[in-house]
Image (tube, rainbow, N blue to C red; front, side, top):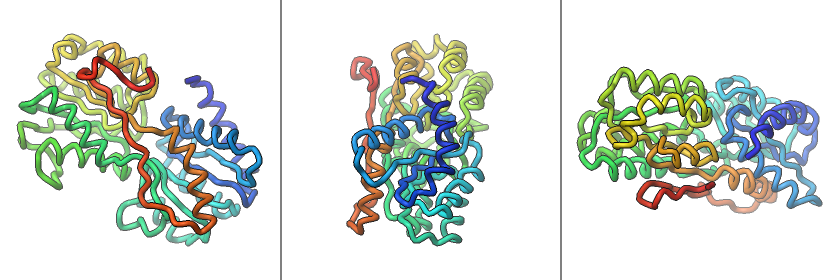
Length: 328
């Protein structure tokens, strides 16, 4: 993937969100932050839809705040799009309660759906459907990969994103429930041999630099750590920094005294996997999300019945499969 596209998308989306949003036939996709390469895949799906539908009356607009840390900025963009009169919006809420609160206040008459990340269960009446990953299942798969490598369990640190991100929290719950063999576990404290170390989970706020610093700090503070779980791919989105951090523990990674399980399968992540810097990757399908979202919004506009949720599936790559990984 050409990562220069990310910066081009940033400037294009910032200008387009004002001009194009005036068009009542605009189908807007609002993501948590344009600085995240995961969301660039959603953009590429949106652009593919545009190329495949040159005669459509509708346009696919990809936009979001410049940084994933700008929760208020994302809410403001959605506010502006609704006020401008776009046809429909697909939102990946960074702060699910804050976004839902604003949608409830505005009570828009246009179709609202979520993509990639959902609202909290109590607020799901505000959207027509969710399109994206079964995030609980993603956490289950991560736990299964960890158990395959560490059958007796061990000490573990979970790295999460935004405290209020429903999708990330669902993955963490899926991991804990599966690892423990119990439902509704808030923290692993020895169930099935798994225990979360002090100071974890850590929250990256979707920032790659912070994610790598946190990994380094956890490795230093816990020299006998058995597993580090990147519930999202943040640290791996900065390949050079991630390589430097994992260089500190490469001997342990090679011997599998320490295992790393990570979310997503973008090109730099599959490269890290092939280099032995992770032991399994559980990938989502963001391009498919961006490609399907406009069609779902059109269905909603036409008053058609749409399933809820709409899951896009997962891709798991691990050592047991001979090192195969998606996006090779």
